Length: 198
Image (cartoon, rainbow, N blue to C red):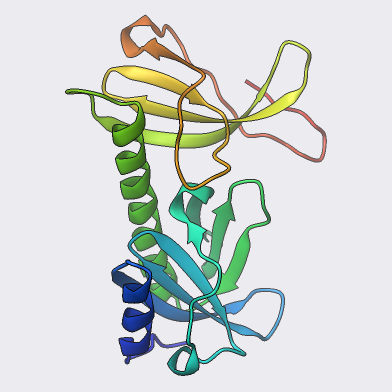
């Protein structure tokens, strides 16, 4: 599953939609023999199925904004497995050469961080404040209902946002100064038992 050596058509298609070419590689879906081409632009991820030859495409498929991708990760038990975790949707699970998977994980996660930093610093993080990281989480409210949230941490504030449903961040629900936090507890969730330990 070698990387395509001629990304000229991909570069041209991305340029038409105002994006720069970042990365492109071929993988295989974990649950089938079908191949898929991951095309990473400067703003969006494009998943091109094996039925579509990149050299013959006239337009790109529907983009997946990096704001809608939680993270990319390789399976520590099998480094040729790549999962691209999408906010509120099933993950894209693909196979590839270990080096291709490692490269894709690093590049996708860097693009996610860059896009989130730019979006946060142009919408609600102001002045000398600097974005540090974000995480998509699920919280349990007072009525024991599970709610999706995004937490954003800057060098000065901790922000709570509703899940992002468009390609821009509008505003946060509430924020706290970092210095006022005494403790933060989190833990893995277990969807099978509906148990969410702190």
